[in-house]
Structures are given as C-alpha cells and as structure tokens.
Image (cartoon, rainbow over all chains, first blue to last red; front, side, top):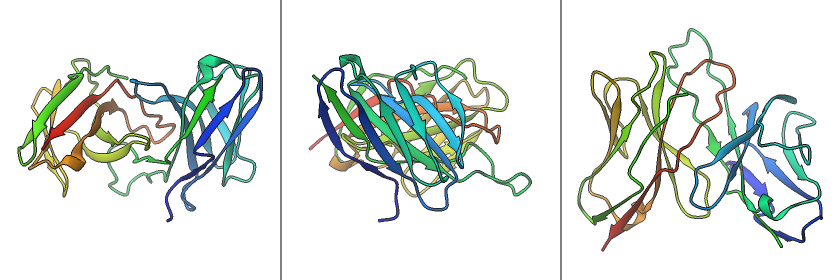
Length: 121
Length: 112
C-alpha cells in the first residue's frame, strides 16, 4: 500500500501525559498537512509543511503542540501535557504541488491517512 | 475562504440517484468547488472538483450553475457502500499553502 500511513491508529492516555503521532506521506509528495477532527465536525487545519519547512500553523495549535518533519519525509505531531479537550482524530494528508503553466487547474488533491484517534482520560 | 452550507443529513434507497446541494453565496472569482467523501474511521477522500458548468468522472457528477453560488454533487445509482459524510469545499488554488477548510458535511445514509 503506497498511501498515507499513520501510527498509531488509536491512543488512550491519561491527562497530563505526552503523546507523539507519526505520519508517513506518499513518497513523492513534498507537502504534508495535519488536521484535527472532533466528533460530528469536519477536519480542521493544524499545520503544514513543504519539505522540511513548517510554513503555517493554525491558532488551534497551542504551545503544547509541536510538529516536525526533519528530513522532509515522515512527520511527527507531539502533544505535551494532554488535556481532555485534545481528544480527537488527528489526520495527516500529503500532496504534490501543481506546476505553473502546465494546465493543472483547481486546488491540489490532498491524500489523507486513516488518522490517529486520541482519547485523553 | 467562502463559507459553505449543506444539509446535515440525507437518506436514500439503494439504486437511486442522490443529489447533494451546497450553497456558497460568497464564492470568489478564483475559487474552485471540491467535494470529499469520508467513511467512518477513515480520512477524507477526493471525489470531484469543478469551476463551472458540469464535471463528470467515474464516480460522480458536479453541476455548477452560471452564478456559481451553489453546486450539486450527483451520485448515480447509489449502493450501501456510498454511506458516508460528503464535504463541499471552496477555495482558491493559489499554488501556495492549500489547506482545506471543511464544514460539517452531509451525512448520507443509503437504505437497503
């Protein structure tokens, strides 16, 4: 399977603990996004990488959250001192940017992983 | 980004055509309309994208009127496996950060 993979798929932790999630994008994709999804809502953007550079962070990403993509391939999302409100599905997506002048129109297609479901007790 | 409005839920019987309409009254000139599908415990999956008139692919059609203030996703002859949440998104392909902005989507339930 050459799609986006995420690990772990499920995580249960106690309030105050740190957790780390991993995302492996599609190999040739240099853009990587993290989203968070709570029950009954659509995914919300958290942060975005182009290669190893983190180019944007949402206001949703508090100081307890940190994301890295050290070699421009896989990415990790760490949550420190977890709170019950952090319980959600954390989704990773990757994409291949379009090229100017090639007739590629529209927004780029993002390919999502299966997500990591976090439950903070 | 333009805000979208969709029905919260819809039911349909197997074999029927399903049309899900999305309103986006504030759509900007450069915005495209994109639909994603999400099954339980999975990430969203791209279905179709369009700018105006009609777009068709192997799974769906997208109808966009001339004023572009709404769009309709059409799923032909649905089956039980089409039960999912469908999201309508609008956005500007600025070739930069193309984060997606999802609404609450339409939960489609197919009835046997």
